[in-house]
Length: 384
Image (cartoon, rainbow, N blue to C red):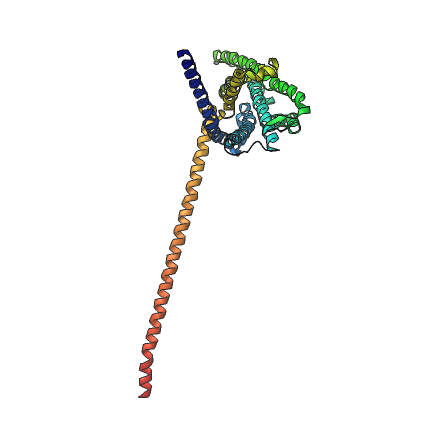
């Protein structure tokens, strides 16, 4: 009897803890993620998209050729967070699970996942090339080429995942594969997990390892110059360019490593489940569902964390953010100041007009009274 009561209490406590965890992730975590990540992504879009940064890119060098990837990645992350917000809003209002909206949101989710992975590969490849061959990197890396590559990745993702708009439909208020497309979607999910998680992980880990080793070698040889015959001014310029490139490399190394850490649990479980777990076993194993569900919720962090990494590790980004905030503060001050001056001028004009009207009325009244007072005198004088 005591054992049964103990089992009941343990089961009830575990059920209570799981319900509490589910409530936190479903109602609090998603909303906080959208608010914090959305604010950060908007700042990233503004900073990397403003004309001042784009014009300085041409003069700073190849270390800024990664800005198109960071700019478009922030836009993609914002779209993903909007979908997450709609998911949170579905707790109260049916927003996502409608014909048409269901297919589009699922399609955009797959596209954003692909963009997030391959933009990370793209700027990690650029940094690897800048570290290995720093003297020829300016001839190959530029803002224009990076932008073309970024747009090409977006175009490929939009075309590749367009099948979801056809093969997915609403089934019992959920997005589900059409019956005659079920096998096709199953194989495409396997391909998606390989090209979005498995291949990028292998590539990013390999390149990050090479970058770390190369940075250590550069640190050991930082006092050596390869251009011994050049002037001192050229040496100073070369050292400045190397320092800027090294800082950018460390920043993007932190971004890619954070991406690997955050995405690792969901990538491993999801890929393993698609490759080695049958559908029957998956339906009968709540533990796999449990881990995949919560690891997927943690995976959402990868779409909201980049701004805060830039703030902590990016000195140039902090300077641009401070400059933007100071300009915005000055603009608001001038706007409110001009509005206040305009209101004061209007108030003064109203007072002056009121005073003028009062003086005019008084003058007219005084004149009329004077005329009326003079008329009897002339009348009497004429009678006399």
